[in-house]
Image (cartoon, rainbow over all chains, first blue to last red):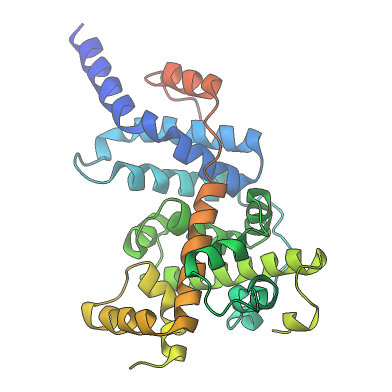
Amino acid sequence: MADYKLNQDKKQKFEGLFIPLMDNLYNLALRMTRNSSDAEDLVQETYLKAFRYFHHFQQGTNARAWIMKILTNTFRTKYRKSQKEPIQIDIENVENFFLVDELKPRFQPANKSEVRKSEDITETLKAYVSDDIIQALDSIPEQFRMAVLLSDVERFNYQEIADILGASIGTVKSRIFRGRKLLQKQLYEFARKRGIVGEKDGKV
Amino acid sequence: MVKCEEVLKHLYDYIDKQLDKVSLSKIEEHIKLCKYCRRHYDFEIELKNLIKKSCFQKKAPELLKNKIINMLGDPPPEE
């Protein structure tokens, strides 16, 4: 009976901390696995593992970072090997690519001397819908994608991302940088295919 | 004032708040005054927000949520 009570307490505590995070985990899992059935499996396995290792969790520390690390590790061991990586993109040549410069000519009204900056920038990105962003993200290699997701979607700082991925801060920084550049290059390709930007602007 | 080149090189560190106070205020100052770099900054912030919005559209399926809650506390499966 005492055991039962103890387990119920543990379960309640666990649920209180981690169940509210399930949307975060599910959305991240979707972008990691790139399909909903694997994402569901991944989230489920992550929760079961987290519950099993709950006694390792230190009360008062970042619960979201703790379970994200389990998610990431589970993904790596279970799903990574079976996934076909997208075609390798030339990483070296994207370092100095700035999407904002490429989109500029078309979206900046030439006759207005002063455009309010916020309107201006929002206009620039209006060319893209959420599906474009997702498609562009899915096209970049996993290690870069992960770093970008943890920063941009989950808003972890570099130290937290380093802990989650088991990498150095330098590595995290470089993956975020390259990941964002690859994403921008991909978004540029979409714009080019739709005729929003010209061919010659795309030389990088 | 720091050069635009320098600002663009450290723009992500600035946006992600990874800079020490001195570098941070140098870049902050530059972005206030330079329209070109401010445009870059605004764009990166907008894109970062668009990525977040695009990747946070779904809710975990209720069935999955209930299944997980029911499984918690079960003996671990054989591995």
